[in-house]
Length: 258
Image 1 (cartoon, helix red, strand yellow):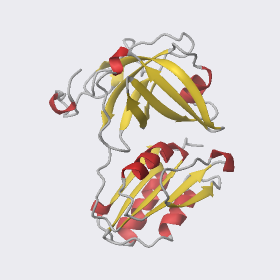
Image 2 (cartoon, helix red, strand yellow):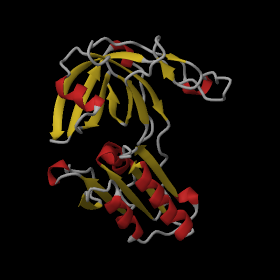
Image 3 (cartoon, helix red, strand yellow):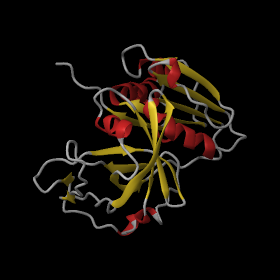
Image 4 (cartoon, helix red, strand yellow):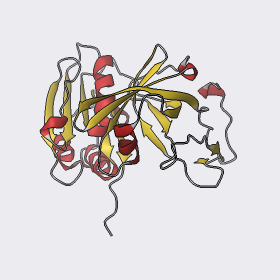
């Protein structure tokens, strides 16, 4: 495998992602009615190290309908299949990578490609992973942390809670579709779970706007892209806080209705 620091750049300037590592499903586990943990194994996972919390990996799934795993080629800008179509790749937080195993927690939603696959994937089903991408660096000098996200961000929030020194106070806001989606979080943060209102991320936007944030705090948020844009606007434009204190990531986009 090629190390991320010496991967060649394409003519467009984008680094070529790490090569895909083959793996197979070992087992699946329902963490909640809305989240399934898929545990992968395989010889290629040896040496896969995730050094930072809230990192990401690309997971290549079998082709829908055939179950065949077709490894795509990098064209300098994106991965493409031999026929020019985009492969079934989704990006996730690697919840655990150790002892030749990889845990990926997938949020279940109707019609989702990864959701459909995860709900029926038998042991031995093939997949592949590329990564990890860069995660988040904890600031041990922060006076406090504010973490927020929807269900897709729960794995990353859990990792951040495990990494933040216990002496630093942490506030957590999580938006979920139903009360059954709530999970126990690591440590003892000040946490608040919000039921979604139908507008993805709306309760997170309101929660962040109502929370005091100073230059000495650190903020990490992830969720629906439009909601994250509103949070950036609140933090940076409306409050005038420095961008260096906050990491706000759009994990997914709400489908257009028109």
